[in-house]
Length: 385
Image 1: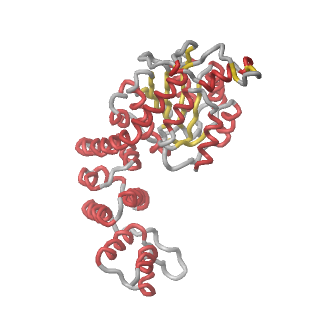
Image 2: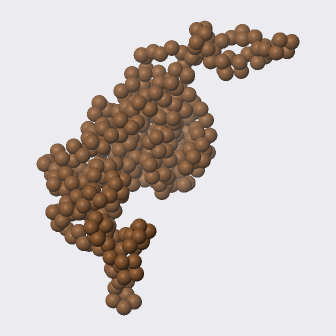
Image 3: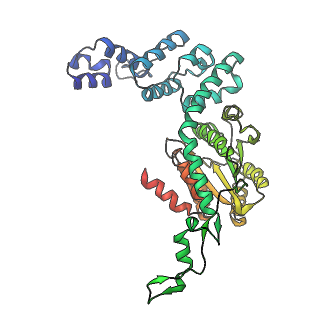
């Protein structure tokens, strides 16, 4: 069997064995692992086909062996997809409450989301292992995002702080020229800069207040994980005062736990309804310097509270000078299902609602700090994808 035939045989599964041939060795083991999760067989006559194979059963040892097999034969990115599919298709959620199962899985953001949703029913011995799994994912995420976030935010803060008597190295030439165009001298073909505008020097004072308000309904699991990690990174910067608020129908302020992202994530409770209005009302009380505040709402905008009041509160924040950002998702998956009517209503207030990947979030924060046009930023993000 040539390479192309082997690949097609793995894609098509057992029914293609007669036409493409039999697999052997590692490829046969890969096929068995795929079949346990994805194979379906014909029903009797013209009846419906069977549900996806339950070949893994409800046996923790059997599932643990399968998890070991897929980690041996597939790259980690594929393993994570197969694990996610197994949890959904074969209803293995309850098995994740067993410590030996958690030892066998490949940690990723989606697994963390599943564990957080099980947090309230998890046995104590399992919770210790779950924390280790979450810690591994969080450490990986921090390594990925921390330096980029700090560099983007620090640069934006320095650019946003303008002085009128700058040192030569600190002159913002673009703004200086624009401010002095009326002093253009045609005979010399130059601008005489009567007023210099420069970047501010670094300072340890708090320059911006950042409020992250995160919807913790079940559909927002990945966004909750990324938001928690970003919040701890932002909170580590002395030039920012960072608050983290999560909500469903209740509102929980996790700001005092921002020293440890694992504690932050275990302080969330995925699932439940959504009362965005109530969450924004709480966050309004945290705004003490509107012109220096950035309010980031991360939600799919399905409102279970009072919609008109929610929109009125957003309008009040914008009118007061708060930079308001609405993210439909903070994840790698792209735009989720969301309430289009609420998104359109926010856009009419000058607040675009859009999805953002974790890699783009530092740039978004820089744009918000510099008060750039976020509608243009959202359009730019869309054109990249």
